[in-house]
Image (cartoon, rainbow, N blue to C red; front, side):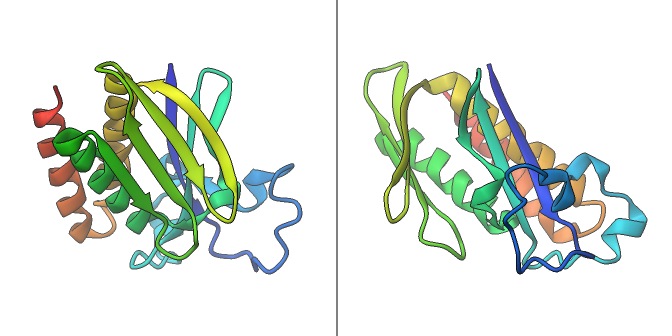
Length: 168
């Protein structure tokens, strides 16, 4: 079972010291379901700093320590889904860091996932359809939730829905 959640960096915090991030992520991030009108007024939606957490069972595939411009990362993940669908291989670039997510089709139902930066942080095999559906669920939720505050996020929501329709 996959869990895919999006977070935004708390706007009122100064983020020069991230040493407590691993132990106290709630001091730094807000899960997007917690954003309200008051919080939204202090956020910069283009670009929006945040993170995506992806978990498969007990295994963390992507964590909050890999934060970046979360709206750009979601668009990059949608590109990855599209590339997997068309040629069995995909790459998602992090907008403002040297991290990449590589997905490679191993068999019809299995993919190799790699999180790569200056080193390989994580490599594992994943069920293809379940993982792509989880990514699209996360993308749709992210764009739909934040579209209330930034109407241009509608494009991301529409694109996620189009990719889901093509999912085999």
